[in-house]
Image (tube, rainbow, N blue to C red; front, side, top):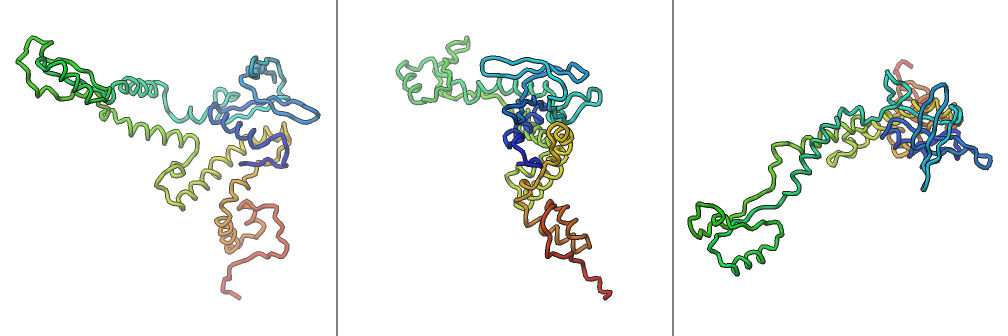
Length: 298
């Protein structure tokens, strides 16, 4: 929903969405700058090798082949976030900062994959003296498809006769409450949201409209805007973009921004500055005057 200024066809919304997805998953987004029919064209690069001294080796995926060719730094748009101090030429995904180790995720996946095949299944011991036709009626009546039928005592050396109390299902469903997977999954979810800069209240089912609105403001101003400032120098140097506007993102909060403008002007802030601080810079203020509080010293 961000808009490049000055507005141009080189950065359409779908391209910006692809940039955001790449930055979230890998911390980097690289595009090859081409000239097509006299217009700049950005082609996404699937993989690349940094050769140093402004040289790259690019790999562009196509339906039936992969295009591989060398490129110079001037024809490559490379956006990076969260660079490592030891390797500043490489970006890092926010997911890498969430503190989630692959070993932890593998253990959780292994526990669930080993338990789910037995979920809802059990054993039904049948007395050895039960007639075959009666046993078939029992099976037909269950119709669950999740029971294994065994003649419990006849297969052992402690047979004590046909005790019909043996008709008691023995559950095979694993007991997973001791693993506390629910809380662990919730904790992992919140850690991922925090690493990506998304307030958990923004995705909460119980959040109030006011809380969701404040979370939305925090997400836009505390996450989206700083990331836009990080990638702006590269966009300005290669494409001439001077600003990534948040006007479309903040359009839904017109009433809140109007209240902010009123509060600022009542505090003595010039109207033009208050409008700029609230995302309405560049607006025609002809006929409007600054409003100041009455100090009572007239």
